Figure 1 (spheres, rainbow, N blue to C red):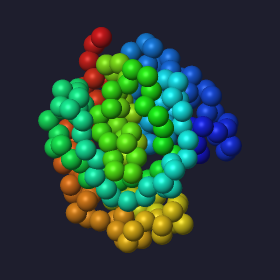
Figure 2 (cartoon, rainbow, N blue to C red):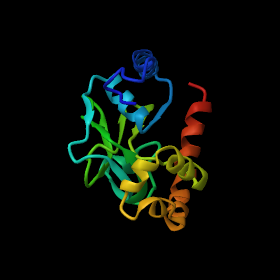
Figure 3 (cartoon, one colour):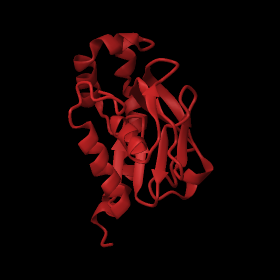
Length: 179
């Protein structure tokens, strides 16, 4: 699926409209990978195939200065080693704040307003999710440096777990907090 095409994605327009409505109403929104691309599109930014090809690997992203005071990213290490598994990228929407950048693709995490975040990388994964990705997208997994086994890296997964809980707990508190 691509946030820029209806091909195989008959609900794309409805999902973009739903996300745009959530942002407009201030509903806490956490959009991951395709979701980040849909959030960018909902905010009027272009989404397109990454000119450097698919990014499928564990690789670092560097947090921006703005991330230091962000409701989700504050207090996290300045560099996060995360799982990338995407072929598309996007322009940063007008008014958005970049929170993380990667070497291959600059727009890795951003915030629109005070309550909507787009995260291009996969912060949500655990070993089971990585195995599911590999089983579902084996051809893509074989393109990764080191192949599927590199994607199953226990060390990378353990490192990711140390940043998952704080960020996801913060988001859960935003969702459950009274307005």
